[in-house]
Figure 1: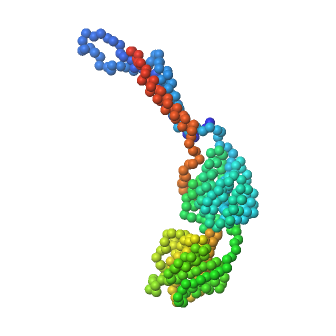
Figure 2: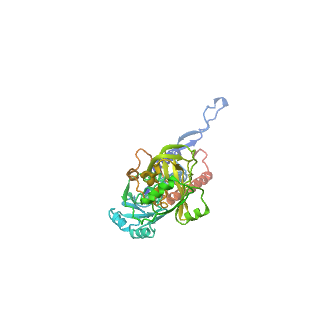
Figure 3: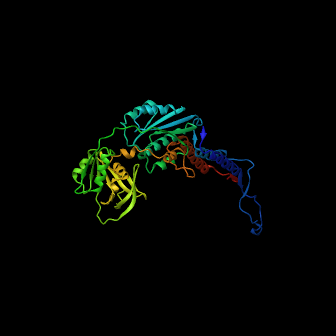
Length: 424
């Protein structure tokens, strides 16, 4: 048997000794003295404390000591079984990798431990106990590109904390492509819930088929944005099926997006809009030039482009099996900014197939290194401890203490005190 809070045992033992010492002190009535008048009555209390020469009420004493010891043992959180020993491993596998051969090779490089748990994740989680089941789960995932590292880390860390109940050392291994689209604002906070390091096994992003480019335009006049997109198309920078709407969208546009294609809402701004030199970053493309900046886009959906000051410049929302992208900037008609390579690379990201460009872009090394070791100088965030569960032994001991307290109270009321002295 082990105790999670053994200090309570020492406190209970000290309290029991104090109860025994107090029990040995009894009250006695002073001796009777015949006095002729009340003038000679001594000014002293009616009863005095003295050591009991013959201690009594041993059953009452035993009950009081048992109450304290049972309560102390309950607060010490006893647990049956031996102390944790051995080692365990939790392997979190990115379900979007799809390359099972690369995953098997990476798993061979992980040293064996007493127990291994596999966590296969994308936007959901499967916890498995053997490698074969984990590989089958990845194959059945159908190479999904929608993956959340936050979901995978959360499940892996919780599983590791469960293993810590029975194993002395537990480590977490993350097998993933670590694309930028897999990170979100909660990833750092979830990582902070694990105080130990995390081993990273990075798998190259699986190659995917290039979709033929087909771009439609809804525009009424000459447009510099359309000219830049067409030039990017002629240079082979575009792929997938998309439609660029420079006016107001219609019901047919929504139908186009819901069928699995990309609808780009890129409204034209008025001619007297404020124009300034600014920079827009999307994916791995950055364009610096003369922009007309519109009000900030809605917080809904995923931000796919930002201004140099961090404000969102474009966002994407899903519609059916496709998506709708809203652009919050425009370019001026005069000039050759739309003919530059930087602008063509920017529009190639903005009209790319839904989600793929951003999910598959490799994350920076600094971001990956932040996953390996916990942040220095930062307190570890604690998740609710789900590993302990109800301590039934402690509950039984506390119930015993309550029953003994009831018995002690009943016995104390039934004890008839002696005429000369009685116990405390």
